[in-house]
Length: 131
Image (cartoon, rainbow, N blue to C red; front, top):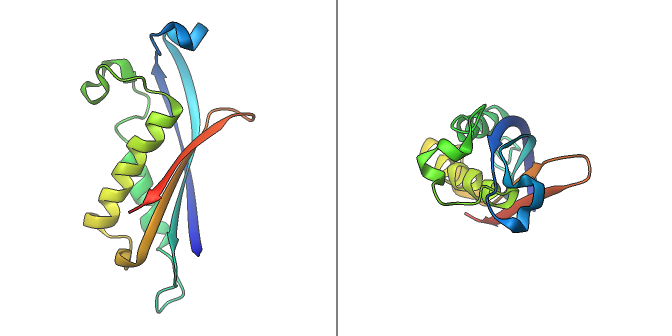
């Protein structure tokens, strides 16, 4: 399996209003390093998994609705716990949509996408699935 991974970051505010989250129940900020990996079984005629520029642009589009926002005020997240894992899946869905509709080169060859959010130097989460 071949892969190309691109990186970006977001700064957000949110709260996790349940006692299970301890001090994170209150509104707090987070800066996430976001990696998106695109997997295929074979390279295209130009030796690519996906075009890195197109993959970077797709990740930037996926993150745009989150950047510098308070997730508690976003209608898409009403009633949701915007955990690292939840956000990984949210971003993954946007990237899957980009792969299917906007194109990432010969995106029909893509098999999987993995989105990783690193919330600190000691903790990260990810979501990975077949397209």
